Length: 513
Image (cartoon, rainbow, N blue to C red; front, side, top):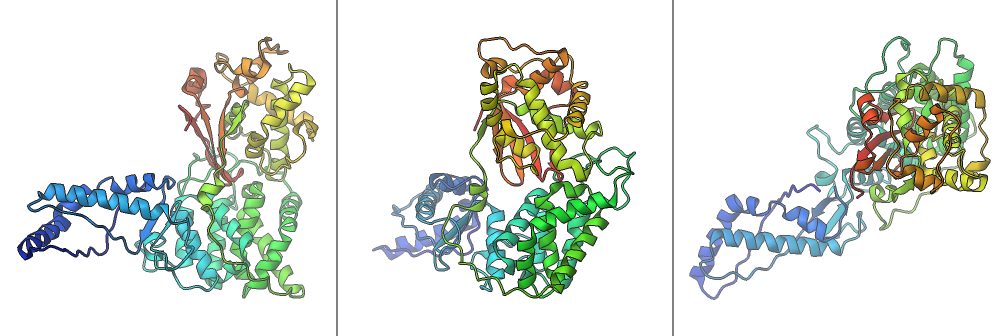
């Protein structure tokens, strides 16, 4: 939690039967506010939020908090400060415990959100609905030194700088929820934001196949470009990928165009929807994406206008987006599947964009079925089903709604060739994670056909806990799962932000939280 406490106004009323005592105490309070109170309040904000059971990272604004203290005559200054801080902590905890998340009531004495993202998003929603800025907006959504910190374009650019993966996911979610978000930006601002999105998320228009992939990470200048565009890749294949994704988004696009004053105002929201729907499109040149968006906008404007979308009901009290989106941890047995992501990039084995979605699904199924092959068919089907959340992270564009055992590998030859190339680079001295093979196969020793399959099983079968949101995934393993061979070879380093998966991927070793 953030323990920063900013008190805009401190007003004191002293009641005493002795005027001299009241005067002395008033002087003490003035000195307290100048010097000792800040030190006494250190940690009080965190403790108050914890007592109120607010989530880590919560941001809070309070209009008014009344504290009542009984003070003895000649109380030392440090004791007065400590008592004031204790009363503040208790009063704030009590107030926040009675307030639902979000801005349910403009007259509420306090408001809190799970994090700054949620506060900023709510501010944008209010703007899109034509509401006035809330009393808390400047404190919780305007944390910026720019000239106009509450302006939508400022907030959206701040998001892109802070966390590109979450920014894109949140932009897409806003566009799905209310088409009136198109009114947040002027045509010029919308055009500039579309260009910035494509510059950040798409490939450069003249990609180099000889350059090493840049390091991954969520920094604003570190974009891990997927080396998928081959010299022979056809524009027709790229166009088919984009047209397929845009067709799935046709309903959203129609509503955006109906609510927007121009195609330009709808463009950045459609771009966010497209890149969130089809992360593989980030492997295409920016010029291809810009052309597809422009053509979609022109085609939409040429069709007869649809009636305006209905006004959505204003949000009511509900769990905050950031906390609701974070899923409960899923236990997985084949967590090592995500360890294949960095080698896919390093070895230049990532499929071309137009094949990325399907080929990643094929690769995941081929690897999973190879290591689970020793199980009887029924047990194998159950074991595959357990890995459904993991498969959805590894290959987000595949449809995993069917029973996993019934989903076919579309191109077995390509999937197995790619898997064999990855297996060949697994460190020869890799060891199985403690208890992993017994957890999957029971007391009967698993028998694999080749040494390569044995190495693959030791890599993949690493039980852990997967937490995933639309913008990130974290896989946690116990400390005992650290493998020195993998560590020396760099296999268990965080992949970081992977635009072609639409998520930031992190690994964590330690006790579960």
